Length: 245
Image (cartoon, rainbow, N blue to C red; front, side, top):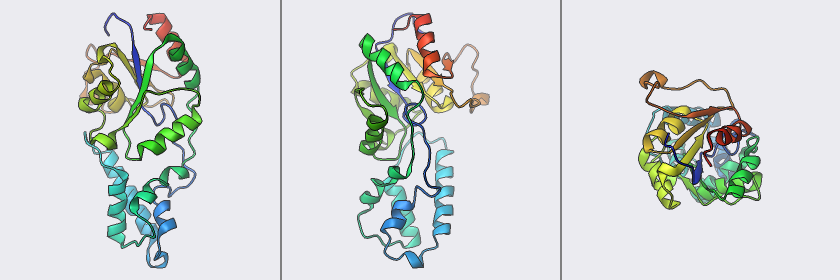
């Protein structure tokens, strides 16, 4: 880590700002079901299994590039001959209502500190879901704070840990990556990705007590520097201890 201070903080979204919790098991295809006009001719169990296998394959592929949920839903619709009473875009904007997210404990306190110190902050996050809908959730669950912007990977087609995605976000915020901190809950995408992109400080918010993923491919000793914390309150203490802000 460089011996200078942080001027900006960039966040991952899901399980970093707000939690990823489901109301319904089949939440990713419920909007298709709601708008389907030939429901009785569709095997929805087969559609669900197909969607689960697709998402599992997609998220474990380690791709550096992103696609949008509208393309994915179109794939499901065309494969199962689902007839809709609306454009596919309507379904994409309804998906997130089937989630039940909560703010991550301590996030408001942490943002209060950034506001007090005049530190710029924004969101750079992998997502296939509409930016406006995700940002609406964040503003609802973490009110009273003003994120500079929300950059979703589906908007620009690249995703973490691709350095191009991180650097695009920092450029949007007109910040210097060498004076910026990145905070995320995923070790591979967030910590390794942000470190390799040149961030001053990479933070692993490991509040779910996850094990490091893909660490067998990385010589961590002497190569990857990062701060691991179990909560935002612990991170506040670390920042004060290291005089980062």
